[in-house]
Every structure is written in C-alpha cells, then in structure tokens.
Length: 201
Image (tube, rainbow, N blue to C red; front, side):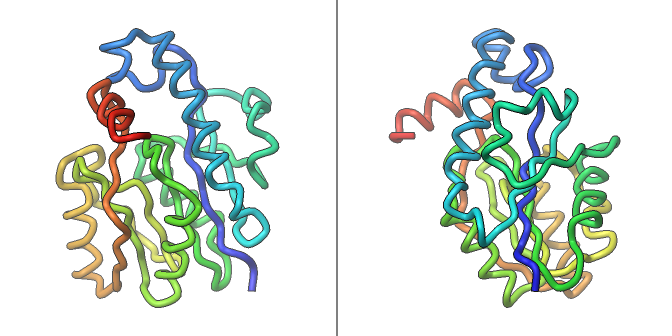
C-alpha cells in the first residue's frame, strides 16, 4: 500500500495577497514576512513524518520556482486549481487519493500543527471515513479522508463560524464516520498571534 499523503496548502507570501486581516494591524509587508516564516515553521514541524508520509506542497500565487526556499521540506509540488476553497480541495483530493491510501490536507494558519497531530489524524483514518481538526473559529485546521468520497466538499460554507458544524452534518447525512482531533487555533488576526505568543508559541 502506498504511504498516506499530506497536502499542505500554501500561498506565495506576496505583500497585499496574504494574511490581509493580520495586515490590517501590522501592514502588508510585515504580514507577508510573518507568513513566510510560518510556512517554514509548519513545514519544519512536519519533517519527522518524511518517509512514512508523502508531503505535497499545494502552491498558489506564484510559479513553482518561486517556492524554491521550501523545496527541501516537501516531497512534491502541485499547483492548486482555480475556484473557491471547496473546489480546490475537491480537485486536490481527487488527484492525490489513489487506491486505499489516506489523504489529509492542512493550511498554513495553525502554528500549533505538528507531526504528532498529523500522525494521529492518519491513525484515525484507519478506523473512520473522515477526520477533522477543529479550529477555535468554527472551521478546521486539518481535513482528511480514508478514501476518496465524491462530493465531500460540496455545500460547505467556507471561512464561516459554522464551517465545521455544517461539514459534520453533511458527513452524518452521508453516513460517513468522523474522527476529531484536539481543537487548535488558526492565526488570522494580530490578536490571534498575540494570544499564540502569550501562551508560549
């Protein structure tokens, strides 16, 4: 059986196009510099998975060559499709989920996300159809499937307080079993980041 795959969704840290809510407090240049550091931090925290999990950088916002600073931290690169987050996730899972291997996806907003959480997610997928990592804002920092489930991302409201709740209800109606990881915080605003640092992040 092929190893599970972790899709890391990341955007090129161009000022004005990333972390706009954070930029409202610290400026676009500073927000982009901060986000660049977060990409490195998250990918570094996942390195102990290499060999047992295939890490794929799902990039957006610039050609693949622009992501060369992180080339040594991923096993492969894949350009995100056009469309909203649901479409991009759907296409990514359909592309990478072959055979019986599990696939999970994360973003680059949860700085507490580490190899142990990802490992726990793939363990859960040995017993459930899907797994979510709940975020404190009502969304999720990780989503995974044990096998490809067509239409899994359809009808889910994105970046909303009810994102996870709606998706869980969709799974219930479709009779897909769900596992939940511990809740973590996404960093979207300066207040989020200040709280993260205050708690020893």
